[in-house]
Length: 106
Image (cartoon, rainbow, N blue to C red; front, side, top):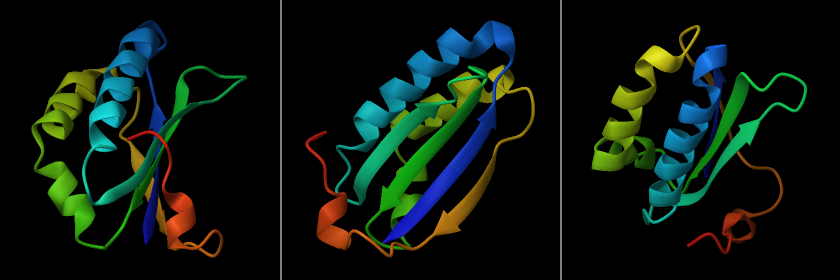
């Protein structure tokens, strides 16, 4: 498992549009066989701050995800909505085990 947290700072006037585009991307992303989970999280006390939590089954799956039409649409749609370039950190899972990451999102 590869878990990626993507940190995104959105321009205040673009929050709603960014949220809609990101939820559309996440809805499609969880249909990919290489993605166990894809969450869009918005900070409670600062709605311009988002974290995408992407859980991939293998280290190769992020590259496959970036080849999809829905990712490319999201990337192009939200590019100008960001106040600063997005950043990410990569993790491995300690708990739950790999089967515990699957959700009913599919």
